Length: 293
View: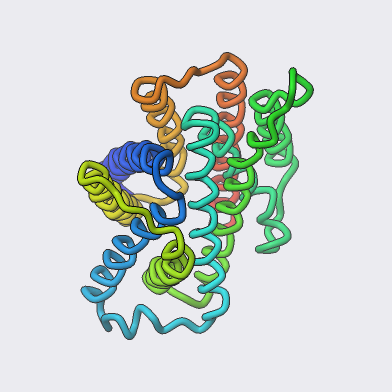
């Protein structure tokens, strides 16, 4: 991997983080007015269309993209991600972008925690220590025992747990299926599932909000396109830490647009969680290099 490719990969990952943060902000706006299931359903329609177009331009077309050797796993992955998105968007409407993203930042720690039972990977004492410190950061954010603990604060943590499991199952699926196959099943399965659910919660939208919905769909496609390009030009382990900038962008958006506050415990806890997460990503990269070398 050349320095130029790494620099381009980092820039693309930063752009990806910014676009996804904007997507979260628009989701927060729309889901505060309309039903979450309907908003996610329409978003998935566009996402599925994007996936199908991408698959159609690959070698072998749609037939090759749909040719999985583990359909049950791929369907479960797609359902899990759709459910995770619904949970996270609901968290945005209840807690706001700032606190939701601060807690969700723990998902790389959950990936490390679950990599043993799900993938059979060995987690060393350094990463175990980082995981423990990271969860201490989550406790600083949630502040259990301080005044009256709001159970809603656990919603983004549940979302992070679901997303971590989705990521691990994606890695598990990669043992038999290509990334293109997993991407296709993610979009199509999610669109079918959300249509079956969201159609019962349809609400009329204003012309202005349909415009916002259009922008939301475009950010979803643009974000995934940038992410694919970032991973094409640079190793995932090298650019993944820059995905944490989504927390920074979303926090700024929450404060500037939605008038949210960044409380000191949330800022301190988020810093602890991010530091621990970056360390676990770095250790995973070191471990992979040692095994290869």
